[in-house]
Amino acid sequence: LAHLDWNPKAVILHQTCTGIGSYLEKMNHYTQLEADSYGANPPFKLTRWGVFSRSFGMFTQTLFHFKGIRDGFPGFIVACFNFITSRIVMIKCWEIQNSKKG
Image (cartoon, helix red, strand yellow):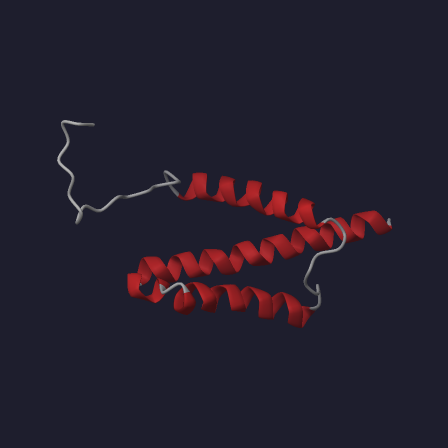
């Protein structure tokens, strides 16, 4: 690394996925880990309103708190995926709760 010039204005691109397929695989893996960590007692209510408000909250938090809106359409896409990811976690938690009952 000694031969490389250091540039404080350089941009580092950190790509964790190679495309939508690998993103969906990671989403499935990590949502399952999260749902399994909660077990049958997630820290949120699995009501219609609870599911909607938590998912919508993730969407707005990504756009505004984490400033995804500054990234334009790509930021909007990430916010949409966070909405979907949140919803998937809750569906998996619901599935865990209902599999324990029967």
